[in-house]
Length: 621
Image 1: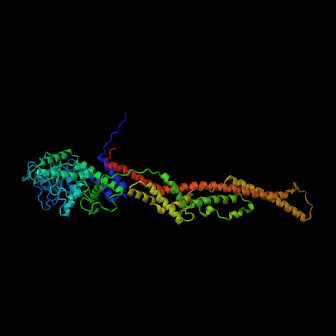
Image 2: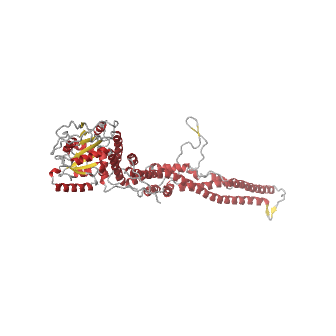
Image 3: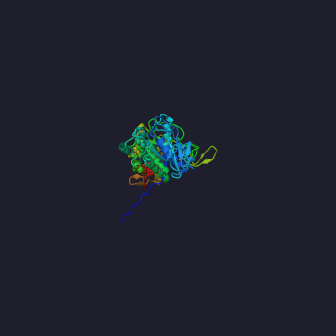
């Protein structure tokens, strides 16, 4: 029987942690506005959770003449809000509280100075029908300025509080319910906030029942197009009280649930995550570009960001800044949810081969390998050549010494204070390998670009650009790193094979034989010159021994030298192969340190970003 694993919902804490990590991972890679918005959401969530969760901030928002202030008076049973239809009458937000003990820090954070504690037994009298104090304990009802006010300060106040309150009630009227100002600027960007949004069609007393049904059907269609399918839509008349009981019951149930604040934060996390995903896709957001036309991303003002004194009662709003507004709009600008592309499977070891080859050529590895073989032959001839001509070889410089490679290090050097420094502890000097040519440098740059291109294949453009930048980040240090790697690589060229000593001894022996034959012949010549009687002359066949010793010693020395040269050539090839492997390994380490490791870090960063952004967006586990 197949067992199905139970999928668990991600908690708000986990989503916030994931969003914070995603913002850190995206920093410097994605658009700054998206990263700043995500961090703003995390900071705001921390402050909101530290405030009273027993109180729910409900905001009535709407256009001029929509009747939201009348509705505020009706719901609160007061005449706190001034009513008007032709001009903005609400200049600053005000609050009505039911059992508001402990709500002070929350209102301080919202920067609401006008507050009224509603008492069922002491209404302001002109309006009746408000909640009793025990019906909606913890309700904080806000009357916001008009979002389409001619006063810029009013619009900014609405923008700030729309991003902070727990529950949004949009009050529309039959004349302007389809106004693009409210749909494009607020409702559509807040499509993730369905659980904390209520839409009210006010002033239905001006319409016939049939017209009300048509308006509600058309408004529902617009809301569905805005991504707010299923959002409660209530038809009311603040003048006659029709439908107000349904609205009052709906708000009372939301307040009693005491989870609107968490639903709001979850929606904010989702919106910020969508904005990061959108920025990650390379669409919509660019460095320094605002999503909201006409919005200054870095404009200051109260509530634009956390300050040193942020916290309950500090009056510093963490979520009301323009950066979050831009991110909110970015999250809604795409047609449908943006999916973060799955990270590609890239083997860095597979990329190392071509890159190491190009860097090896640029580092002069072929020149060094050839020098190792020549140096071995040079030293072999100097050690095993015919002694009378051996000194001529020693007049030639060693090919490796010419490149300042393979030089024996001093046993100790003296520091400034006279203390001995261990061998190899001092700085490594540059070699005398020929400088990298323009062609080699071009091939090296091409190899680095191709490595970055292959590694970033399949990545979204911002992350692919980050991979390419990482591959080139240490390009200025690459040549010095390669030279240092070559200089510090053990080439294995300093060792002396045992047969060199044997061949050298043999050469000296045959030289002594030849010299003994030559001295013998010189003695015979001297005796003949002095007319002395000739001694007995041993022979080998017809050839006298002195001649045999001289000619045999010379010929045998030449044969030994020739054989040693063949052996030296073969040994040079072996040492060159070993040196080539060692040098390529050292160059490979440089390639990994300067190119592949930074590329791998960016790929790992993107994989982690894809994982945490899925968690932040609320993906089930």
